[in-house]
Amino acid sequence: MGYCVGPVSFMKGFDAFAGVIKSGGKTRRAAKMVILNTGHPDILEFINSKANEEKESVVLLDNGYAARGRRGVFIDLFPKRESQRARDDEFMLAVANDGDWTTRAIVTGNL
Image (cartoon, rainbow, N blue to C red; front, side, top):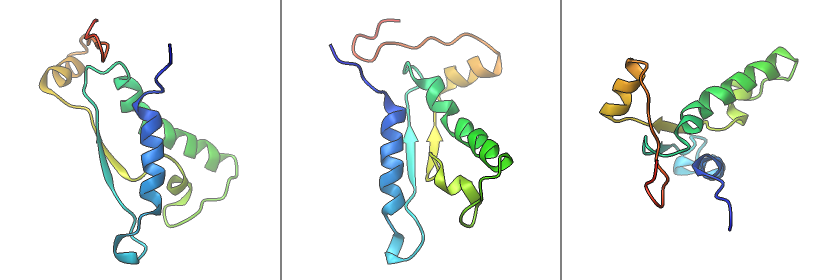
């Protein structure tokens, strides 16, 4: 039986694809939106992926790595060309009330 790498791994690949697409042949890069069902087992990894990459960039800068590009080292980290969405009313209420949230298996729907 195989192991699925999960949606965040695919997001990294699509981020790389978006990095080589230029709007109108100029320097403006592509943008993308990534949406994940809040019941997905990888929802926390998905939500934290952008913040984790930004923390890594701060560590790199604090340790002497030279910033590159207009916005510095952030340009070289994933995910940089996307807007992430993980939202539904029940999920947001659980977050606001520090409540519990249950994810489900994708194929079977089991808890």
